[in-house]
Length: 378
Image (cartoon, rainbow, N blue to C red):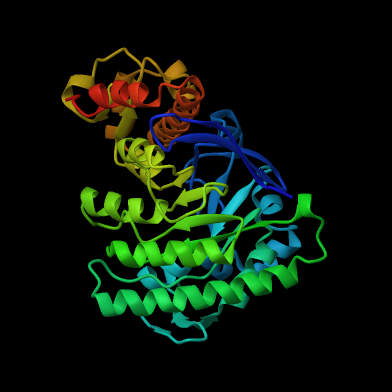
């Protein structure tokens, strides 16, 4: 069974529009996935998620494994039942969190030993265990355990991490096939392999070719958007995209700035997630079709316009910039809720515009129209 179908291709770029079939419904690509790291999109309810038009959420194996724990999730029938979310959820393998949050960790050929960032308790993740954990979580799209490296990383460290990531992906794929053998194709979760390689284009290309040979259901590009320059990021991404088959979805992990999403879609990327829209909202920053701005700035105190006149979200339909400025300065929780709703809807709408532009055959013109306003706004 083919899980991914390309519906439209842009004639001038590698941009495309498609549909990904998961056990819990269709995901139309290009797609932005709100981040529900610990089983919630911060400050946003399930009702809001539905109204936003989010077709897939991103959650995290590491965090859910530690809290609330797999036993609790299993009692609720998995994460979807626990958080009352009917649609698809993609789970990150937890490799990045083991790297970034654990003060004590030891990576071996067999897996990674680490201490919980919550209470210091010892734990062990192997490629097979992470597949088992995601089965308990019950997500629709699973990922292989990978090894993340610091940025910048030495070539030796990047090569070692890549070697382990490739070996672990083979083990994860084998265990996934065995674990899901009894599930009929339409109900089987999907498996994405994670591509590493740091800022070395040749290692990125090697990782892409290896993952293409492994033939998972999709490809996830990890280890980018972690502090490198935009030029380094796009060079590394291009090296990956040039070496992947075009019949599978490609997911750029942790990318959320709209200009970077437009540029990545032009290279052929289909899926994105990031904490940026909700984190920036909590810091008072609005992403809008007229550019980004901070609601606390003095000029918005008496502004009766919505955050974004072109936005159809609950926040923009009902509240003014002046009111949001007051809420933010008063440290009212509602400011975070409303601005998170808007920022998420803005990115979801942007990816919809990309799909429509590909279908209409004017992707480059649509991208230029966005960039001309967004990147020059004051």
